[in-house]
Length: 155
Image 1 (cartoon, rainbow, N blue to C red):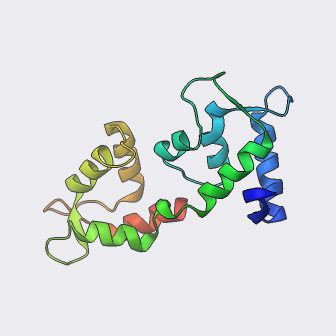
Image 2: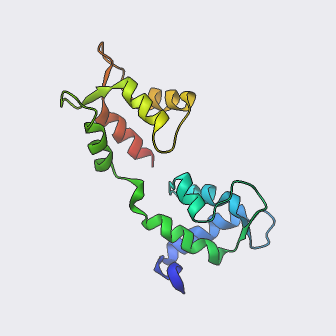
Image 3: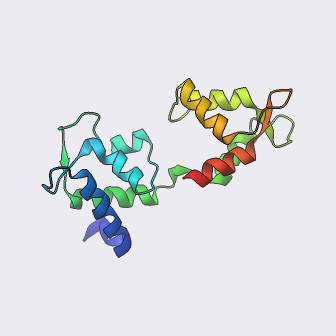
């Protein structure tokens, strides 16, 4: 049975259902272009690098997958620890907390989101920060824990 044997029956059913949505013509195949979208539909949040490493393609019609190919991909991403936890994110943002007050410069958070990891463009960053951040104080500082709590609650 391989790696998909590690998945619960419930997970296997969820994966089969999500896979069927991306099997547009009912042939039992999903285009590898949709691996990331299918994983996200299953409440996972793989990075673009992870998707590519697991066979995701940037163009359609390059590779087709059967459900037997996709189950181990789901299992791998599900147990992947790279996603990061709330505590991991707090530790990272503490590096920017110069006064050890639980705050950081709003502009630094904006820069981090634009420049590191899965880069976001300025309009995406502005939308995320306007939804998840408290207003900056007169010194341009924001408390970062409320931001992280809201961010982690979304995933």
